[in-house]
Image 1 (cartoon, rainbow, N blue to C red):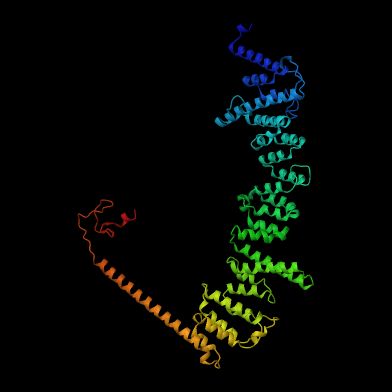
Image 2 (cartoon, one colour; image 1 turned 180 degrees about the vertical axis):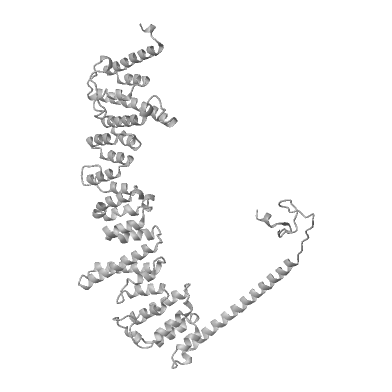
Length: 537
C-alpha cells in the first residue's frame, strides 16, 4: 500500500510511474509529449537517446526493443522517424542549455543533476544532435560544429557517411585537428563533384593557422604552390594578421629551397607593402634580380633573343637599378662582392656611390660607359645630398674628364674611345653651367695651361660673385651671432645681480619648513625660494 510507504519511497514510486508514462507516450508515437515528460523527470539523456536506432556510439548503444515497463517501442520510419528526431532535438537542446548553465555557475564536480558527467554528457548530446540534424535539417550542422562538444571519432564517421566534407572541416578545425583537415582538403581538391573542389579552401585554411602551426603551413602549401603558384603565394602575402606575423626569414628560406620562382614576388611584397627593413631581405632581393638578369643575358647570348626576352630583361634590370637607387636598407659592401667586374657597370656604379667611392663611379660612367651626361647627373645628385664629400664632387668630375686613363678601371674591360683624350669642351660647359657648385681654387689648379682666360671668363665671374655672396652672408650671420652673444651676456649679468635674503624666519612655500644653515635652495623666476629637494617633488 503506497499510503504506508515513506516519503522517499513514495517519491521514487511516483517517479517510476511518471517514467512509465513517458515511455508509453513514446511507444504511442506522442513524441513531443514524451520528451516533455523526460525533461521534467530529468531522465538520463542516454536512456532517452537509446529509444532511437543508431544514435548512440556502438559501445554505448544497447537500444532495447522493449522500453521500461514492457511498452513495445515503435518502429520508426519516414515521417514517424522525422517527428521523433525533431522532438528529440528540442529535448536535447533544453537539456544542453541546463548543463551549460550549471557549468557556468558551479564547477563540474558539484553540478547537479549531472555532476561529474556533465562534459562527457555534453559530448553525447552534441554528437546525437549532429546525427539528428543530418537526418532532418542539415543547415544546422555547421553552426552546431563551430562551438561544440561533439565526440571527434563518432562525429567524423557520421559526417563521412553523409559525405558532409565541408562540415567535417569545421569539426576538425574546432577540435584542433588541422592536419586531418588539410589532408581532407588536399584529397577533395581534385574531386570535381566535391564541395571542397579546388585549392581556395586550402589557401584560406592555411592563412588562418598562424605561426604556431608553421610546420603544417610549409607541409601543405607545397602542392598549392606547385600547381597554382600565383594563388598559392597568398598563403604568405595576404593582408591578414596571421599571415603578416609569420616568421618571414623561415618563409623566405622555405621558398628558396622549394619554390625559387616565388622568392622575388614574396620579397617585393614584404619590402614594398609591409615595409620590411631588415638588410637580409633587401640583399637577397638584389641577389635575385642580379641572377635573373645574368640568366636572361646568357640565354640571349646563345641565340634566344626574342622580343619577349628583351622586354623581360629590360623590366628586371629596371627593377634592379631602381631598387639599388631607392633602397637604403641593403648592405652595399655585401652586395657589391656578388656583382661581376666585366658586366652590370651601372649597377656597380650605384652601389659604389652608396659607399661614397666617387672616383670609381665617375670612372665607370666616363671611362667604361662613355656616358658623360650620367656622370653629370650623378654629381648633381651627390651635391644635393648629405654626402660628406659633396663639395668636391664636381672637381673630381673635371679631373676625370681632363685625365685620360692609362689602363681600364677593371682588367679585361675595354676603355671607351671618348675618354682617351681630355674633354676640355665638356669641362668648360660644366664650369659655365655649374660654376656655383665648383670649388674655384681646386679646379684652377687642374685646368690645362693652354686654356685662355677668355674661355674662363664666365666661370670666374660667376664663381667670384658666388664667393662674395657667401662672404656677405657669413658677415651678416656673424653680426647676428655677436648681437645674440651680447644679449645673453647682458641677461647673465642682470640675473647675477639679483639678491635674495634668507633669515631665521624664511619659510619654504612648498614644505612650509624653515631653511637650515646648510640648505640647498632654488630660486624660481617669480622670486620664490624653495628647498632644492622640494622643487624635485
